[in-house]
Image 1 (cartoon, rainbow, N blue to C red):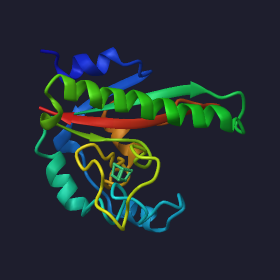
Image 2: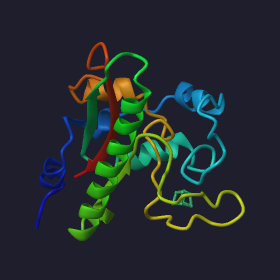
Image 3: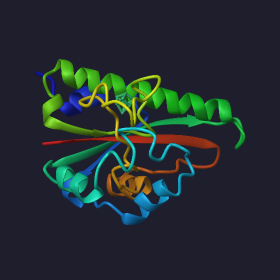
Image 4: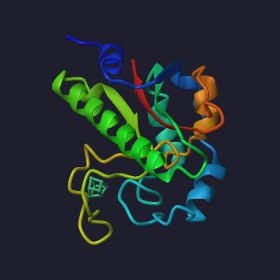
Length: 178
Ligand code: SF4
């Protein structure tokens, strides 16, 4: 049977780093940034705050695992206004991460991992929130930020850059496992 790390390596993430899950710490400030709603998706999804749950409950769940591997899609931009590549990088990260989740499921490992994505849940075209229950509660994608993690701090702990330099864009997600 494949291991979590083997399945991660089969994807084409440009950058991968690992830290101890016990080192992860949620921050109230991150949840406050979500509540400021700069992304315009606060309180619009079962996978975003406040519906995704209390950050300290999420931290307790994270600490049930041994390892946290951060996986990144990194792309070069033509210049800082290259919105097309920024959107392509976000979509690529979602596709790769969702494929990884499918592979973990196919390998019988999905119950043994916790996955935190980049950006909001895109599993359905339109989220059922708040009128109907989540269509796929086992597949919904809670982001690292929604879980209360500073992505930059988590990357640092995992030994990889958050920012790969001028005119680059990186999107990060992570998998927790034993
Ligand atoms: S799986 Fe669908 S219904 Fe559930 S949070 Fe994601 S988009 Fe919303």
